Image (cartoon, rainbow, N blue to C red; front, side):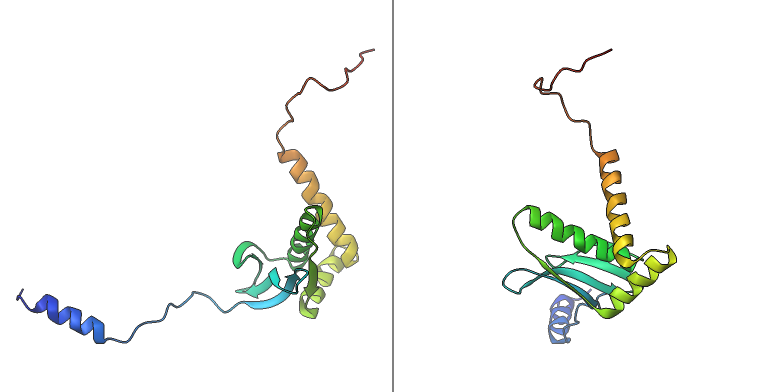
Length: 145
């Protein structure tokens, strides 16, 4: 190895064109947005590589093969934010709504009924996963008969 090989390599690298960062997969096609009171997008759902992706604060936080599940996740985010005092507005694209309605029709339900069923399923799953509440000693005594 010559003394100049490191210098030559450094010059060659400096003169090479910069390679852009290439993301794997197709580009994200937006299909739903969550807008805050000022009209700023804070989240949404997009379609990429045959999956619906839930995006919040610029990060993909969940994915699903189901359009109805993607809508249910968005509606849950809206409900959680409403409980925190932040109003969000949900705008969904016709292809997303159509795909979700088709899924509901497979289950012989309307879209609203199916979304309500998904929310009920989520709640029951959360109740099963919730740890038991510790006793504070302030509960009313139970009577045994």
